[in-house]
Structure formats: structure tokens, C-alpha cells
Amino acid sequence: MAIIKKKKQRQIGEDELIVLDNVTKTYATGSPALNGVSLTVKKGEFVFIVGDSGSGKSTLIKLLLRELIPTSGDIYVNNINLGRLRHRQVPKYRRNLGVVFQDFRLLKDRNVYENVAFAQRIIQTPNRLIKRNVPAILSIVGLASKYKAKPKELSGGEQQRVALARALINKPPILLCDEPTGNLDPNNSWEIMRLLEQINKRGTTVLVVTHNREIVNEMQKRVITMKKGVIVSDEEEGGYIDEN
Amino acid sequence: MRISTFFYTIKQGVKNMFRNAWFSLASIATIASCLLLFGIFYSVVANFQNIVRNAEAGVAVTVFFDEGLSDEEKKHIGDLILDRKEVDRINFISADEAWNSFKDEYLGEYAEGFTENPLEDSENYEIYMKDISLQSSLVTYLKTIQGVRQVNSSQQTADALTGANRLISYISIGIIGILLAVSIFLISNTVMIGISVRKEEIGIMKYIGATDFFVRAPFVVEGLIIGVIGAAIPLGIIYFIYIRAMNMILERFTEIGSILQFLPVETIFSTLIPVSLGIGAGIGLIGSFVTVRKHLRV
Image 1 (cartoon, each protein chain N blue to C red):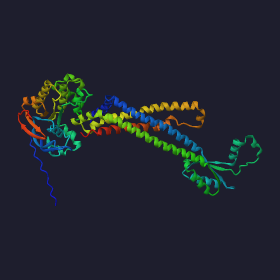
Image 2 (image 1 turned 90 degrees about the vertical axis):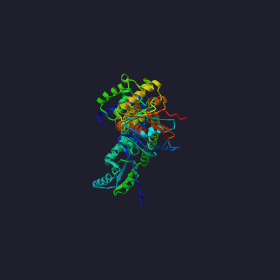
Image 3 (image 1 turned 135 degrees about the horizontal axis):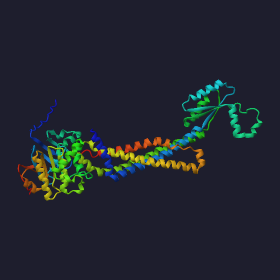
Image 4 (image 1 turned 180 degrees about the vertical axis):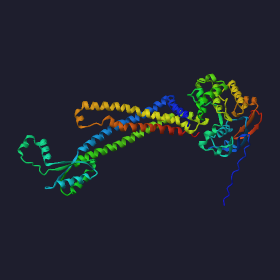
């Protein structure tokens, strides 16, 4: 008689928002992009993920976005096992996440208001609430007066703030930021980071993938350093570890 | 779905069209040119078929009776003929009618010398068929009926008309096939251009948590509108051309007009409108549906 071993599921603690349990991701070509990574992010944390190109940071973000599925291991976000999500359940899952990218990814042909409102439309928020919520969030990111502007009429910093407003308008418990200051000058970079800190203080868990050494060292938050697909250090109030 | 989401979807579909004005124009032009060719071709073929059908309707098989057959027996023969599926209608031509028609057509005043009807035994049935290609099997059958002396038919005319009909059908299938292939090629090219415009937009929507339906619906609305406009334009052009062409042919070539009967524009359009709009809307719907599907797996 064949003995079927049921895989033991990891118990998720009440305050654990993101859990990676021995996660490996291997692409069709080459060595694993992530190799047996385990980590836990608790509710309300502010975490930097740093590392060189090819360290596995982008793969980690893609796994959390459920753009990729791990080759082995489990990922839990908000108590949802991402490996077991069906394609049609993915949109609802993603509404738990606010996402900010290095290249802003705004809808170029829509103005600031419509870009932010779009996130509310997809969860079928009534128009009267959208009309109330969008100006409010634009005020928080300091763009209330530019609601009619198209993305190309805004500076890089302003575009990133629109992306931030869009990410936050549905009040997600988690904010994922993939190199949010990568295309910004130091002043705009700091403005965005201060906004992220404010958002974190209001209770949102923030994960920031970055190369920005100055910001990481200055902000004294938890820093996870990755190298060649594994976590090489995980420090509370850490700094940017020099690879060399 | 909320009513506001429904209207948002429609509004976005319309807006999308104007946002990507060049892409929309290219798509409309592609669909319109394919359907214009289709419409022109359909109009020509429908008229050809009408001409052949009219010619077929005028071709009759004539059945003569044995001498001394009673009226009842002649009627029985008529009933047997009418029972055949391929027969459309029959006319009974009496001896007097046959003589009068012959006199008028060939003799004129010379007929006055005849005191008796020389065509006394020329009573007959003129048989008109629904499908002229079945003429030879009908003639074979008619010859087996008791009381039938002779069956006259023009096999050559029937064969020519059947051949013409078949040729038109083959040409129609061939040209429609070529048109379809060209349409698919042109439309897939246009759609490929559209993909590069849409790829990023669809990706962003999916990252934010939009469902496949929410992403796809405005594109499908857009595709539908483009398809319908792409179909409506050639319909307008064909309507204009058809009336002009018909008038020109009838005015300049009066002889042709008296021989050939063109189908009225309403008859052509009663088929062309639903078919063209259906194809246009179908192409728009399927094109946008397939294009978007490729990018939904984000």
C-alpha cells in the first residue's frame, strides 16, 4: 500500500503578515534565483531588501505579487498560501497589496485623478466615494492641485507620488516598493521615503527593495541582504552591507 | 456588475478608441476594405445568380400526348408531373393555343389558308423546373409515363445554365476564401500593432488587481465599435455605388436592361447588412478578445 505523506503546513502566527518557508525558485535556464529562502515579516514592519543585481530581489517581489509560483516551498501573505491560489483568485489577492515600481507604471493617457481612481474602480467603489477618496489621498501625497495633469506633465518624483497614491487608495495592509527611488534625484528620493515612513506609521507594512545605500543607512530600519538567491543577513535597524 | 461599472466599461471602450486613434483608424480601414471587397463581390454574384435563375425559369420541358387520350388521362399525367419535387409549375397548352401561338410567331397572314388546325395533336404540358440541373432525370421519368408520346427539351441550354451556376458557385467559394485569408492576414497584422500599445496598460491593470473581465471588457467594447463602424462604411459605399452602377448600365446599355433584370438594392441589402455587420462585429470582438487574452496571464 502506498503511503502518501501529507505535507505539514507551517503554522502562521497572528502577527505574521508575510511568511516565506524554504522557498526556491528556479527558472528554466540556469541556477536558482531564490534558494531555500525563509523569512517572516510582521504586521506594521518597515523592511528594506537590498542586494546586487542577480541576488533574487526581483524574483522575490514577483513571487509576492504572485506573478511567479515557487518551484518549492510555501509563501503565505495575509494567511493566503500563494502556491494554491487559482488564476481567477489572483486579482482579489493583489488588492491586499499596494505596489510601487521604479518606472512608476502609470496609465499614460489618463490624468492623475483617473490613474488613482482606477484602483478604486476595479474594486467597484461607487463613484460618490471615489470622488471623495481620490482628492483626499492626493492631498496626502501633495498632488491635490495637479489632479488634471497627465503623467508626462509631471516630474519623476510627482509621478512616483501618483503611483504611491494609487497603491494606497484601497488601504492595503502591505505596500511593496520595487526600487521606488531608482529613477529619482536625492531630494525626490527622500520625499518618497518620508511618505513611506508616514504610511508605515499609520499601520501599513512596507517592503522596499532598493539599491540606495544612503537611504538604507540613514533610516535605520530592518534590512534583509540577499546574495545569489539566499539571505546573507537580516538585521533590525541595519545598514547597507558592502558586498566587497 | 454594478451599473456604474457597466457604464464605465462602455465609456472606457469609446475613450480607448480615441486614445489610440491611429490604431482605431487602421483597424476600421482594414475591416472596411475587406468588407467592401466582400460586399462588391456579393452584389455581383447575387446578380449573376439572379440572371441565371431567371434564365432557368424560362426553360421548359414539353410533353406531348398519345392520340385520343381523354381529358381525364391528360389530367392524371399532369398530376404525376406535379408530384415531382423538381417541378415548379406546369402549363397546359391546348391545340388551339398551340396553333395560335405558332401562327402569330411564324405564319402571320399566310395562316389564312388553313381551315383546320394542323396542330390538332399538339396539346402539351409546358413544365418549368425549380432546379434545371435535374432536367435529364425528369425527361427520363416523363418518357416512362403511359400516354406520353414525346418529350421535348433543350439539354444543351439546361447544361449550359447548370454549368454557369456551378462556375459561379466555385468562383464565389474561391474568392470568398481568398478574401477571408487576406482579411485574417491584414487584421492579425493590425492586431499585432495594437498589442504593443496595450501590453503595458494591461500589465499595469493586472498588477493593481483588476480581474480579467474588468481588463478585457473595455477592449471588447472598443473592438465591437470598431468592427461595426468598419462594416457600416463599406455598406454606405456599396449602396451608393450599386444604385449609380445600375442606373448607368440601364441608361447606357438599354439592350442589356431589357434582357437582364438586376436585383433591387433592397434585396441585396437585406442580406448584406446583417452579414456585413455580423462579420464586422465578430472580427472586432474576436480580435480584441484574443489580443487581450495573450496579456492577461500577468
